[in-house]
Amino acid sequence: MDHEMLKEYPSSQFYGEDMIYHISIIDYLQEWNLNKKGERFIKTVLLQKDGLGLSAIEPVQYANRFSHFMQMNVFV
Image (cartoon, rainbow, N blue to C red; front, side, top):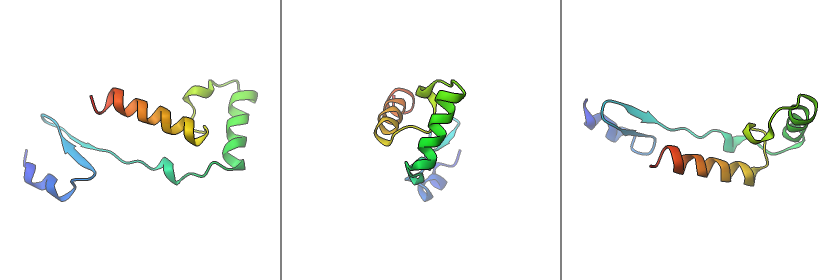
């Protein structure tokens, strides 16, 4: 693998043994508004989905869950 090419994308890519990892975070573009609250209500109350795994979750809870996931699964 040519590791020199990775220098072009230092903030978004890093390399393992024979793999390139690309991390993108797009959920921060979503607003926690009436639509998201409605989505959560429909999925948890009407469709009886488990609210813990949904992306429609309050921002502080989402940030905590995301941070925990990254610490446990990515930055080990």
